[in-house]
Length: 255
Image (cartoon, rainbow, N blue to C red; front, side, top):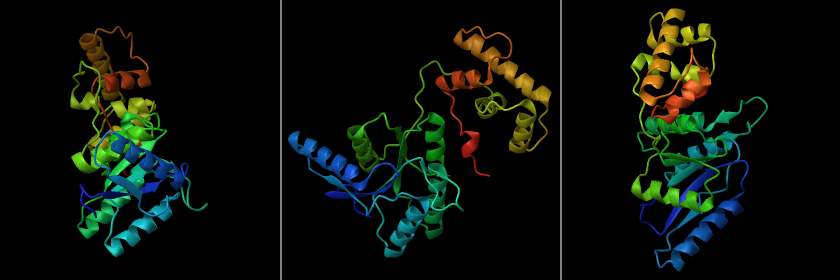
């Protein structure tokens, strides 16, 4: 792996939408901007072809492990098509976990990984970072912002964090544990089953209703809102997200 202050840093890209020529242009334009501003003209180069399936990504990384030459940065899209009809579509979170585990097995550091996706959400970014990634941003951030972020991750060890608007909503642990299930808008019997599994003790429907009432009460008292009754599940989760809480969405949890 090259040193962070080297003239050239390599980027392995997994993306089924953008071609190598797109990324080469992004990197070239950004380098030109730096030169125009009188800054060092360090630049990114692609670490081989842009890979469009998870199988190709794994093969590329396994070859890199064998050769002992890893990319400085890995840039992942969230979803790429399956490599064959027998394979399921895989998310960036699953790919990130695979890379983390492969590096752990070899007792080496995980390359600095960034998620750039049209499907961005704070929950996805949180799950990606928990899986071993460093940062995440949506496609609304253009190429200039993307390349700036790659440099910040590489040189400054920038790490994604949830930055909600104040004030932060104060919730007990058991109430906060309900939030992923409200976000998924699950029926009570599925929530009780999930929480029982998570907490390794029986959680009943009455417990779920009590936690939900505690959540509504906290929102009304702390944020000055006037939610009547038990509120909409997804709306309650959104309010909590906007006021400081973050969780791993159920769809990204390790089974």
